[in-house]
Amino acid sequence: MVKLMTNVPKIGRAQVFNLSEANQLLPVIQKITQRLHVKNFEIESRLQRLLMADPRRRHYQDEFKENITEWKTKMEGLGVRVNNLWQIQFSVGSGFLCWQFPELVIAHFLPENKQWDERIKLKEYLETYDPDWAY
Image (cartoon, rainbow, N blue to C red; front, side, top):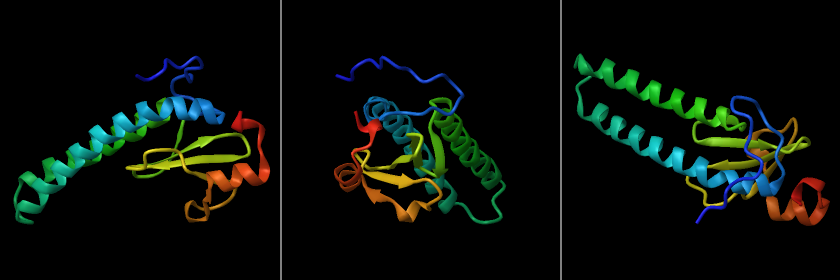
């Protein structure tokens, strides 16, 4: 059973989270992402079966784009930052907790002004720096 969040983010505004708040919100993010990821996979499968000249391609391409836009809008509505498709960041003020589909947990930290591929394992970051947002 998922615990009810005590600090629900203000819809549509980027939020500053602590680790506990991010972990509480993660199941919602995972559920939304899983649903829209499956939907995109189905659309991609249909597109692959169509000839390039098939007029139905346009419909599926538009549906694919709308699905991605829906995901991005929902993620931003929850107060998280979208890094790339199926990748999000929870701001902690001094950097970001990182998650990407299909990870099961938030397992990385990204310092400010760094790129996604420069993420640090969260456990190592917590052991080294013991930040306030971890509590």
